[in-house]
Image (tube, rainbow, N blue to C red; front, side, top):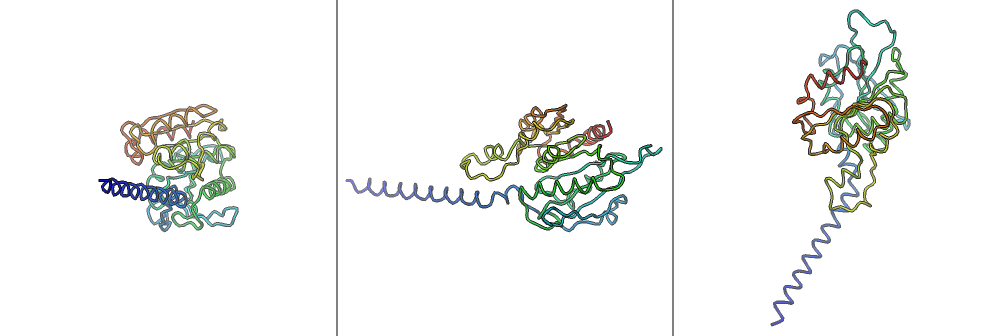
Length: 285
């Protein structure tokens, strides 16, 4: 009579051991490949701006402190008529999301370039046409190198440098703003931290395996320049509550703009001209 119970117990033990081994394997894989989850690093050749119809653009190279070569675009200011009296122009340093490259988003960069404002955008290490490996340290190193390259360009007003960061790029933007003088910060769909994103999407995994920081919330407390935050109110990847928390943590003046009906990847389409005009007004104020 005991035989069925013994068989059932052995079967239950095997199932439990199988689940434990599967979970352990998942934890090991998550620990090993978390950089790839955060930085998928798509590759794509850097397009020639003039060949795709961006007449005011040029290819540039930026070298990080460790010697890593990054490629990017510099868009000269489109000067209105009559031209401005200042010999220097404001500029916008653009940091894109984790699954993007310049090759993928250049039409958006062209459309959103503020009037009379220069734009610099570089592919992160391991992304697009840039050398190197995609890591959190590499993201910050690229951000510092891009800022230094922009400040060094003739005709750029170092007192009117703005930084724009979308999704993962928000971490690069807050990094720059917490370490360098900037006139303003524009964040689109920002998250609070890597730990908060892990709780949101990988709740079953233990916290101690997380090596990434990406602490936007902590850096916002150090940023005293004006901040403009955009966030879709239907964002399921980075919840709208995170955008609210990031805005609330700003040490200086901040404005939060919710884009009705927008998820994580359609903010440009949903926001349209109203989104663009708010960005332009922020840079031109």
